[in-house]
Length: 392
Ligand SMILES: NC(=O)c1ccc[n+]([C@@H]2O[C@H](COP(=O)([O-])OP(=O)(O)OC[C@H]3O[C@@H](n4cnc5c(N)ncnc54)[C@H](OP(=O)(O)O)[C@@H]3O)[C@@H](O)[C@H]2O)c1
Image 1: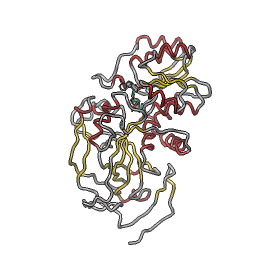
Image 2 (image 1 turned 90 degrees about the vertical axis):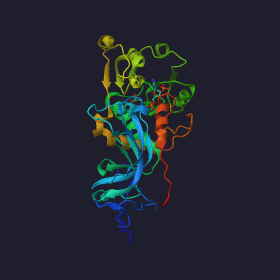
Image 3 (image 1 turned 45 degrees about the horizontal axis):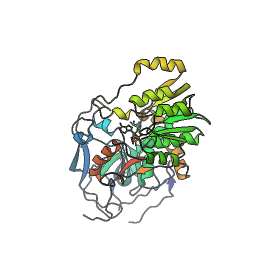
């Protein structure tokens, strides 16, 4: 059967979307049969591995079980079956495993927020905009699996299956949208970013620099401070060797206009103290508390009204899920910046971790541990390799 090739259309990230239809390709109908052959001549297996939350706990190893043999899901109409090639680790994976995202959900449930891979099969109406073999990314829970079914209307066509795009899906868009909505950035403003060398912090630093701000970034090692310098951070502060409050008082006595704060506890208090008159603090997270049973470390909340009033300052919470109407615009802008060489998307594959690179679903446990040692530089990404042409 010959291919019916239609002129390629450009997807919203500039990736080619080929509206190709060929009966030789596995456009799935509901009489799905296992062991069909995918676009690389290898088989889509009947079973796969995936991670499942089997017990609520912020201790990822306690909460999550690797299921060695579950059925590969079948895409329905309007859905894609994606073979995951890279999945992202997020600080909130342990909030999810502890049930803090949705108290009504009881185990077992799937976990993992985002992934990138190739379409290996699709339901009929999804073939209008997607084709088998196409690289796609997505944000949807359940990514810690070899295969996942994703509705075509939330799948994002990408030019390549590369881990740099993955860094933008949650980490990049969080920085972009929150700073745009609540940062009011402009030339000469002073910005403090905490966890600045991490997955989302790296983007906050660079976006503030793009807006010609003076950027201070906190981190826990000299290596991270060096990385921060390399992405344009004006004043990296290693909080393990320097007193952040003293450095801030000395270098920016008038205070900062914006704080991108994701640590919580003492760092939150310190950040509120650092605010300039009419300054804005954006609460991105409070990672220092996530491993505790409450999920939080105490802050000087009692003093907050007085501290904010004295400076006419403000504190905004920001949770990406509430800003999905801005998501597409943000991702397009970030991809453009990355493709034009104006944005570094640093990926941490775990080479510096004790047992080396994170490869395979099994290594997700190590990758989460690694994040909570605070050693990562950039976004932690786990690779799920696929042996091309491994015929069953
Ligand atoms: N609001 C949203 O929609 C949204 C979306 C994405 C992420 N976030 C938040 O952004 C923050 C960063 O998340 P991420 O996934 O990008 O992680 P990440 O920054 O890649 O990694 C976490 C970093 O936090 C720092 N850290 C400070 N205290 C820590 C502690 N007690 N335990 C572990 N790490 C600590 C470490 O760097 P240093 O100590 O060297 O600074 C570590 O490398 C989290 O608070 C997360 O919840 C929020």
